[in-house]
Length: 394
Image (cartoon, rainbow, N blue to C red; front, side, top):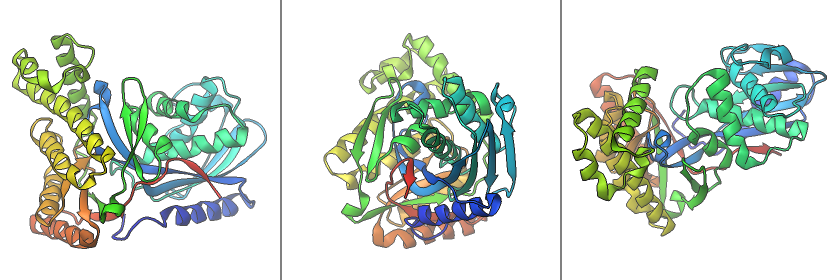
């Protein structure tokens, strides 16, 4: 990420993917397909609790230039690694046969075949501006762009509403990463100028108007550059704690605890840590609903305090932030951000801040200065507006 808006990113990446295809295959691609990274405006760790999330797509994109090739062989070139990987039908008969970055591509082929689709061979070239490891769903962007390309090239019957679940299955089963449905839903189904209100229980969606620019605002996304100390163990521990609490409270999921009944629910839990985890999830679901209500009413400036309250809950109750993340949030707020919060699973990743458009650089500079004072690795940043989901480019 850089310090400038990302509006031209899709065009730049498409040109790089096309150039890579020409160089690698000495031919022209049949088309180019793009899928965005995503930021979650609000609703963290609510997805696996059957709750509500509100992500939006970024103008940072992964682009796949592709063309069919005979037989059941797939050849993939990656700009990032400089590698070309080829795998055949025998490699997508079961999960795990292809590894590293190419597993995400093979996983999509495997998931399509496993769902009964006749997937033809293809040559693909991949370029991306979605930063890896920053919590902006680079893996989902790759899966969605590859999926869009293969569906179009093969003229496959796969309605868009069914594509997120298939892409998620590729990542969960073939790659072995335990992601929820939010990332794939966002990168596939988001619309420009909107956030995607997703009910993670029934997977219903509503496009919620979210146009910061119309209100003179922008979203500043800061990559904390913090090493992911998380890990999978901490994430799994949070999930396990939530599931155990739901069982103890006698509900299918924590989503079924209404905020009005939160105090009674907490009183039934003996462990203080578990009470904190439950309080975060229940109040976070309510913050999503409150944010949606404000955006439906066109009151985008008023969502700032909800974003900040979400961060405090992640910091104090769910305990998933790190010093770099907290420093970025505090510095952004002190410099005039209307609201700021960590976005993503935690233990590193990105912070988003809702800021006056003409103050974005000043807020970013304040975060950078605060990092320098603490001796942290300098952060990077980009300003974004809600962008469209996966699409074929002209």
